[in-house]
Length: 148
Image 1 (cartoon, one colour):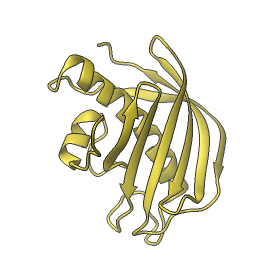
Image 2: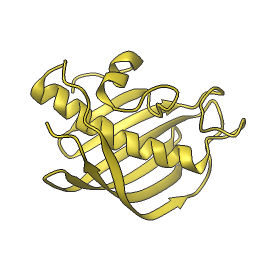
Image 3: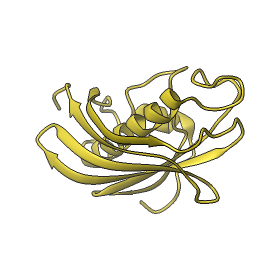
């Protein structure tokens, strides 16, 4: 990946989630073993409580960041017209929420791929603010249900 992708319409084509449930708006870094996504938390975000992104919003941001990794990989490997593959969270381990980010905060989510076997991925995830403060972390197992 040569440059940051901030085109929200392009980002939305890479993930199966649709408005108003999109919890990522930037692709900051990508390689086969990692993705870094971004999100600016806005007042109209469906998973805010009018002041902060909720715990559910942080977990959904993590899951969508995994979907972004798969979606961008699919875009690179199979072409721009392929629809994003649907998956679900199979397990969440060691989920820790340290702080809820306020509306207006930019969060950065790093997903490290630990293992991928067929349609199952095991990942380690950290969500930080722009200052580098750890807001949340977890380990997730996700499963793709659509076939390529």
